[in-house]
Image 1 (cartoon, rainbow, N blue to C red):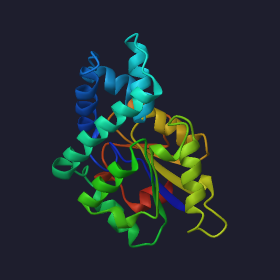
Image 2: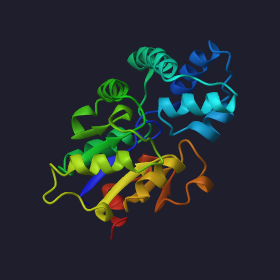
Image 3: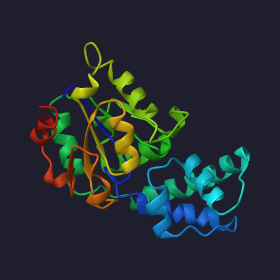
Length: 225
């Protein structure tokens, strides 16, 4: 591999329940009820902006840009408060990241979450220093499934790979169909973990695993063989 890029929520940390609960709390104040099933079936993998916009449209509401900024800030404060006390790493994530960091393979995070959420949660579980690059929601104009985020992550990882990482020699770890589509659009290899979606919805990935506890560096290298 030239480089390894992780999605964050649902791959490294078990944060989707936190995001759902905080979306629900903020949207309830606007008279919008967001169900568990709708969140996981329609909006998981979206950044906050796209989620608020899509939920509003699906409920025949229109949120202005300023309203979406207001809702995003309110949700962010709730998420940060929760992450200070309750964020948990998913099985095998910390161990795998630590083992790969020892090999000096360049690693990045590409996520639809806001930077301060990623920074806080990754520090809380002890992996922040393992990543050279973080691409967060505010770094891109278009969230997943658009490939902009992964394209930017590859560009920034170029500082650590002579000549820049070859997309075909880059592995992305994702948990959502939108994320898989985003990574594959650049030609990257994709390992999907079925932490958020059933395997039947992740079939565009090159390999599917139930957990990162089942994955080794050798497994990741085999994806580009």
